[in-house]
Image (cartoon, rainbow, N blue to C red; front, side, top):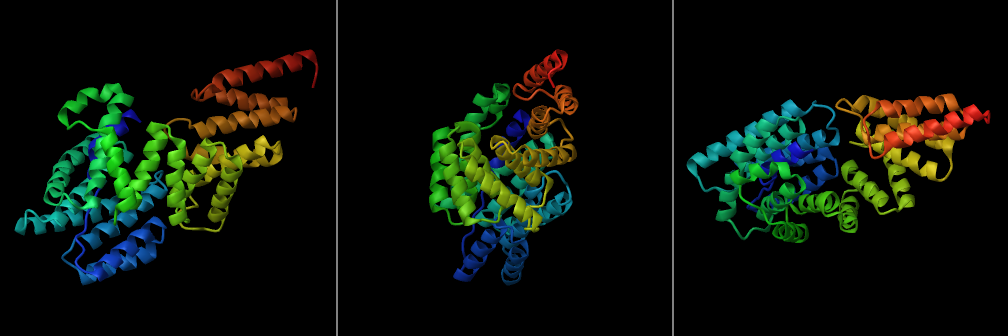
Length: 388
């Protein structure tokens, strides 16, 4: 995680983009297409962006947004690299197109932003795949392009997205992860409060980037500020605006859990599983089903409905075994521990011990090893006393 934030620090500044709307039709196509991407209506979005390419073949916008469809395919299921190669190919085409524009007009703001944004997104995918060197290099190249475009058009609200993200993370990451401080001498310092103000301004007034600003605010309030009420407010905005985006809907449920609204969380995650069963786009992925299964099981467990809880915890374990290639996840460890508790409650002590022993063989998560050890001792006392 620490490495990821260090690498992303300089790539996040490049995700902002701007469009100098040439006419109302151009503007309406872009806005409609962006909303369709966020609501996982990829076929409709692609038709709109292909229309943009046909009608404005010399503008990089259409080509960039077609690539963003593949970016969201990646975000929906980061456990597969199915879309990586095609995403890189499309992004490189955008960069090449921008380079041709910049050869004739070095101060073309749109070309600067779309080139910077494209290189920044390459860095973001590099970081997702643990290619930190490439991620950092792409960020190094992208940042001055975004800065140049910002200087050329400082009044555009959407321009501030990249700077808001950069200002926040450049200030926060060294405090959260002191080991990265030596790297900060190579890049400009940040300003957390300024970054939040910039992002709030874009979230309220942005034309093309307001939803991206809302998304970043939600995640920073959750991960760093620990202001779960503020994070929840943005999750509500995004989920209401895009009710069929599984990423936003999962965040909505996750924040309901964090704010102890188990009834709401249960309804959200059950709806997610229903959408997965009914093949809603983006919902039928291992990560989505695993998370939803865990929280539905957790709610059944709190209600004492152990048979139902067991079914969903077992589903969570099954998907975790598929997903956890780089270490045991919290989902796997907690679900296994809960299965042991359920089996112990049912007086199926052999099965309970098997689950507790599995927890001890896994990575430590919170106090999982202490709990599993204590529960094993409890069963041993029961068995030694002859009380079954």
